[in-house]
Structure formats: structure tokens, C-alpha cells
Length: 505
Image (cartoon, rainbow, N blue to C red; front, side, top):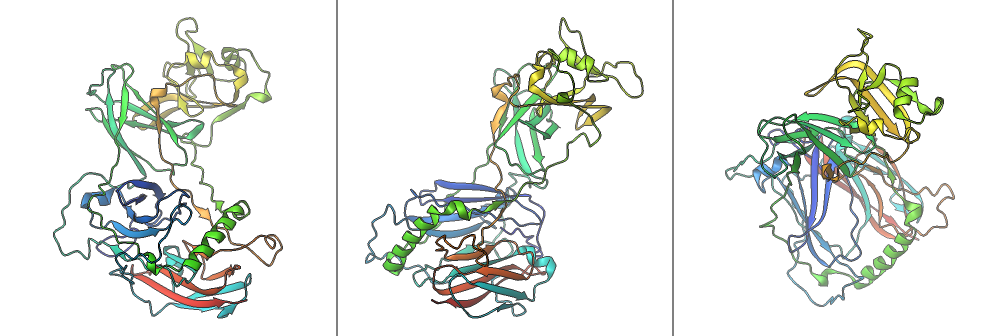
């Protein structure tokens, strides 16, 4: 996915989240992916389910901001999926012929780019070296390369890209969504226990079970509505949202849903007569063999960079396994944790912290976290079993976070699931963003995969180039292969350059 500014065709950072959906002929969503855009680009992949129906599908790419323009600027492409495992195919039956062309108003051959191959003919399971000349180093991350077998029965799909820049009609802009400039947007409203709108400002605590690094504090508007963005990549599926107010007990939070209008999407027709029965049968067999050996051909998931803890790198850290274990948290804080203690133990226990500037205990309320969850009722910590706690981190300074002020931070880490039960009504399911991958490529200079069948039709796919010299290995599949280099140059112009070679026994 490449996101560009309509005025100069350059990559834009206006949106940090891209959305890719696949819909069937009934406008039913088959998949929905969220991508983390970096410098206006992202990549991912999706698995075609084994029970999917044969038919015409539509791949749509867009951002939250692009919805304000309707269908203008939204990428659409037909995908024809034929499932030979659950469909009886009549190759003599012909429907409307698919146009044998690819269309893009910015598509052009780039005369300054040259593809050099180590040779034009290869044997199965041999190494090839591809050298790319004519691309500036800073533009490589907006260029992809694909090496795939040419297939005489492949249907050339017509790709139509609606572009605001190329459309001469009047642009009907209707503001619905703000751009996700910093990250994933969460919006909604706070309601009282009766389901009515709550009319005052609230603190909203955003937290993730077991992830202290994801804790955030936001503030709603005066009518109880809120709209905030999470900048760090979302690689988890559950969040907790808690609203705090002096005047409202047990407030409820409702999240807005983002829906795209699929109406009016046109599709082509699948022509079975253009397919080669023998080629299709061979591919069906090879797919099953490849799936059987998928465990030894796994893609590598690139880890998400950890976000620094919001309170900095200088807390006082107590690993409780380094100390004598006590039976209660009260004794643990009294005997081990300096400058922190419980007050009002008989009525309503609360933790207090001594400030650096005055060794006397202050009356300010600290921020207390248990596995990343904010704890307002300190009696839950008072009644916690110390054996379940592995570590306690203390920040003694006055701490300002968003709209909140705290007299220090008490960050408690458990060994597993804590005994404290968090309210289920504060739990919300979220869709993780697709993780980046390093795609599997065999190396036949070693004996690691020598005994594993290799029926790859796609020899190589690198969605973001890092250098201009690429090594790849052919598979057991023979025939003609196509190298396709696509992307955008330093001026934002789209290009597509191809080169062919042959694999023979």
C-alpha cells in the first residue's frame, strides 16, 4: 500500500493506518486488515480460505481520511478466485470475456531503470542474482519486486485506480473522519448507568492487560464524547477503557464503529474458458504438497519495537524474589518498599508516597498500576497475595500525565494472572495490525531443504527493497518466469519494469 499526496504525488504521512478489505459479490466482507503505515507505505498478505467460494471478489484499499471523499481516491481491484477443491468447473462454459489489459493512469515504463540477471536460463533449485540499476537508495523502500511463473491461463485483471488528482468532476468532500495522523483512532461517548449521555469532562484510562508500556490517560469533551489516537503499533486484541469522574458512579463507554459503504462497486466476470485444465490440476496438487510442508517454510515475523515505559528509565525497582517473602502486601511495603506505605488500613486502605523534597508523607494520590491496569481502589492491592507479585517499581516524583497529576507511580508486576478481577464491562476487543514479515526463501547452497519438495510458483516477493542486489533460488517448477519491479521513483511517478527468464530441466 502506497499513500500519496494528490497535489505533488509524493509520499504523505497524513495517515498512519491503512485499511485493506476483500468483499464478495454480495458485498460481504471476507477479510479486513489494518496496516501500520510508515512514510506512506505498508505491506501485508492474506490467506485464501480453503472453503471460499469460486467467484469475483473486490480488493479495496483506503484510509480513514479518504472516506471523506467517498469512492474518489479509493483503490479498487478485481480478484478472481477459483476453488478447485469445492467447485465443479465447466471449462466449455464462457461468460463475459475479461479485458486483457492492466490500467493505471500513472503507469509507465521507466527508461532509467535497468534489471540485470546473472543469466537468462536456470536449472531447478539454482541461485540467481538480480541487480537493479537506476533507482535512488532513498526510494528503495517504495519499490517491490516479484518473481513468479508466467501462466498461459492467467487472467489479466483490469486494475482501476480512482484518483482525486485525475478526476475532473467536482470533488464532494464531506467531513466524517479526521486523519489518523498519530495512530489508531478510538472515538465514542461516555454514558451514565441509565444509558444517558453524561455531560461533563472525564479522565479516560487506556490500558492493556500485562502491558504497562501501553498505559495512557486522556480526557473527554464536556459532552462526554472523546476522540484520541494510539501512536504505538497495536499488536494485542484486548484493551480496557475506564472513565473516572467525581460525580458519576460506574460510567459506561461506547466505542464508535467504522463502516465503509460498499454499494455501487462494479465487478468483472470470470471466464472459465480462458483457463487451462491441466495447469489448474497441477497447481491444485502442488498447493496441497506445499501446505503439507508449510511448517518447514514458515515466514519470520518481525518483532514490534517495544515502546519505552511512560514514566521514564529511573524508577526504584524491587524484585521481591531477592527479599524475604511476607504474608501480606502491607508487611511487604513496610519491610521492603521504601518511601511507600498504606494509610487508613482499617477503613479504606490507600497507598501514599514520600516526596524527595520533603521526607514527610504527602496527601497526593499516586498512580497505582497492576500489570498495566490502573487501580483506583487500593484495597485490591492491600488484599493481594504477595506470592503472586514478582516486581514493584516506584517513581517518587510528582508526575503529570495528560490531564492528570499524581504523587508518584507504583507499578506492580505479577507472576501471572493477578487475583484482582477487573470489571468485564471495561474490556473491549480490538483488531491487531498486521505484523511485518520476512518472507521465506530457501537456500540450496546448504542441505537444510534439499529433501523437501519445492513447488513454489512465486519464487520471490520483497515488498520493500533494502538494497539493489537480490539473490533468489528457483524451485522444482519449470517454464517461463517474470521479474516485475513496481513502485514510485523519487518524483512520485509510478513505474513498472519487467524481465523474463526460463527454468529448464
